[in-house]
Length: 67
Image 1 (cartoon, rainbow, N blue to C red):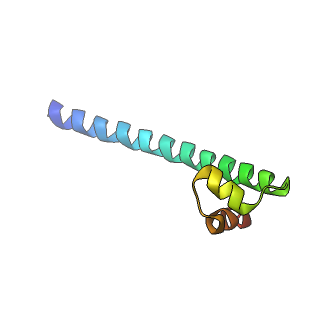
Image 2 (image 1 turned 60 degrees about the vertical axis):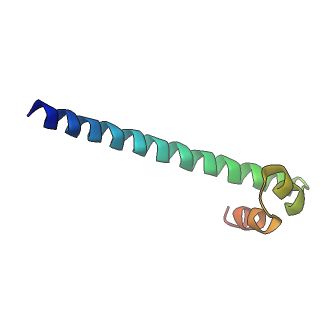
């Protein structure tokens, strides 16, 4: 049964890593949204922001609107 215990431990470790990754990704998305919003409020157009970050101006506008 040690093999089963090892597999269970590996699954638990993977689940923990996944949770940490999801938390990190959510924080990065929030920082991205905040940076886009602040740049737009400072005068950058959605088109300019989209070109800089590789998104359409419509997508940038939606991200900023979701702030």
